[in-house]
Length: 351
Image (cartoon, rainbow, N blue to C red):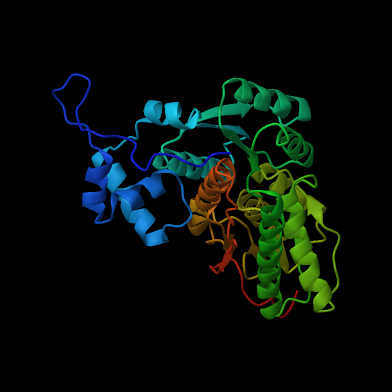
């Protein structure tokens, strides 16, 4: 595949009407204080530009309203400069923020986005969506599809045209993202054990989601390594309602600490515990996962694991653009971080 793309996407600043000057690449370079070649590399999604320089260039692009001349580039590169995105359930915080990051990075690189929202994540619907995008001549696709069956459909389509999985990013990145979540779940569980809790109960997400399995693996690993009893895990569907319902199946007389698979389920848990007369954290400590914006305002504010989902989306774009140019782009390690708030404390002395 040829990678001989023009360094400049535009030549003049004249509009078709000739009366309004359209910002060009040189204007962006002047405002950002960099060379035109650097701006061109940022627009093309090159990984060789330092993060701070890229951010400065992207800020200049936004301020000036600069748009690369996509039609001219397509004639040279024989590409549409459009990427497809397949997603479902964007109402979930993680998926919605991942899509936002994808759109931001694609726009900064001069790519348009064709988004297909799926009513379900069946293998057939994912395959059909990817085939539709390919028929639209997109250069490649990103799939925000977390379930096992739908991810297999993406891997099958990847044989025909470039497809990248989010949050796994690509074949190597899947392991990186998985183990980052395992490590974060271990840290959350260790936090509760360090406070003095004898063990930690767990309410996980759906069993056919890699993220859910990673978080459950991290929880179990922490308990086993410290030779603690591993309680029977419960599962929800990521919703607050499922977290609320799961509390009914917990042996509350012996529960002092809970690690919940995401923050939405955790808010249901907080509500259910309160209705049963249990105080958080005086009676039961609760840790969530994801750090949704509302988590700091739950009652009490929720200890949780922060994830930068928008950065996951941006990395997906960088990986895909690297593949389109026959370059290997390392997605980089993901580092979810524990955020300690008021929902965790040492266990009660007496039950």
